[in-house]
Amino acid sequence: MDYTIRPMRADEYPLLEDFLYEAIFIPDGVDPPPRDILLLPELQLYIKDFGTEKDDHCLVAETAGKVVGAVWVRIMNDYGHVDDKTPSFAISLYKDYRGNGIGTALMTEMLALLKREGYRQASLAVQKANYAVRMYKKTGFEIVGENDEEYIVICKL
Image (tube, rainbow, N blue to C red; front, side):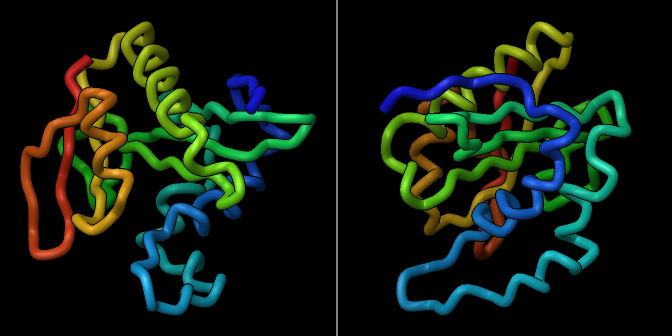
């Protein structure tokens, strides 16, 4: 599949709401939550006023003129928060585009961008049952903590 990775344009920031919803891990046999779950403050952290802070960065994958995936970071007190100098990741792709290496490419490009920008590490939280755990490990993340449901993972840059 041909795709391009590029910075997200400011006029595309509303797409982050769709990608945040797509990023919600839904185990097999469980119904997806209603979209209004995105109104919860702990989820709004990921998208509210995105692009207004110096630590807000987003890359998208585009194919045939359509944005099909996004990876974005910001410094926030989210589930994967480590400290106030470590950006937290969010990533998702529309279902039809998963399994083609696009997510790994997005992660790799964002890690390179963060390194160029002088960050020393990046973090995220991921549910233990999420298939993406393998991708995170493959791109250099290591488990540094966990609770009953999630791993906290960090990638040194």
